[in-house]
Amino acid sequence: MLHTRTTAAERRRDLRAKLASGRLLRVPGAINPLSAKLIEETGFDACYLSGAVLAADLGLPDIGLTTSTEIAARAQQFTRVTGLPALIDADTGFGEPMNAARTVQLMEDAGLAGLHLEDQVNPKRCGHLDGKAVVPREEMVRRLRAAADARRDPDFLLMARTDARSVEGLDAAVDRARAYVDAGADALFPEALRDEAEFAAFRAAVDVPLLANMTEFGKSPLLGAATLERLGYNIALYPVTLLRLAMGAVEDGLRTLAADGTQEALLPRMQTRSRLYELLGYEQYAAFDSAVFDFTLPPGD
View (cartoon, rainbow, N blue to C red):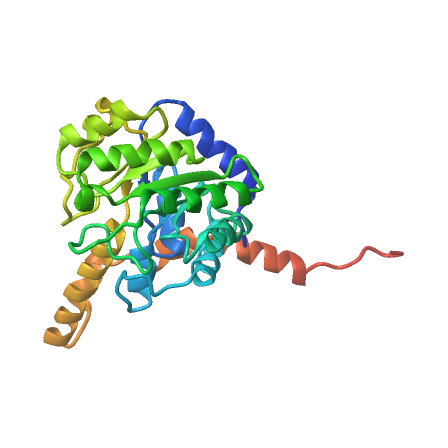
């Protein structure tokens, strides 16, 4: 009630232990704190806060318009309500290496289990759009070293994302990935790979946890969990799935409401009031409130 009972340090150790298990972790992107509670209840391994989802929630495109403090404030809302480890998309670190260092500490303070930094120029673009540009490898290495030096909790996961596949080709992306590990990255996120062979090439090249971005309507195939596990990947990320599902349902519902003049036909598709209250923990809040206001001191105290 009010907040999760786990600490940030416990959640970070939990994520590290899960990654060390060798099994594939399935990580959906939440759209709000309430959906993060559902992700936990459904049995997933962690939750994720996508930069694209946060931008869309604010009515903005994913082109680097959000700030580190906006994202940290949003992250704190998520870590308050779920005991799952939470990862966040920290874009390019929001500036120069010193900005990346500050970003790491902001996200640590927000209770997150880790973040990823990418090697795009600042401001960035969505990873599955054409026209991306990446910084020189040496600049990204400086960004990662600053982030690693700024980290206060060694269990906080620092992941490097490379967007170089679509800009410089697969071999260059693999070379960058190796350099990023040497610079202090604990894990890697190769963005916009084109087929299973490219996923396999990354696995063969590095010996750190790997994330597979299974975003819809992008450049990568939607590989199933069994395939990703066979390829040796550690995290299957579904960053925007819940937002797309929710917004599709909202659009359909609005069209029905406009056409019918009533929401009657939509009722079977809605989460019920009782289910919402169950998810929110209304009963526990009511019990706590009653205990506070009904409390009386015994005689003599």
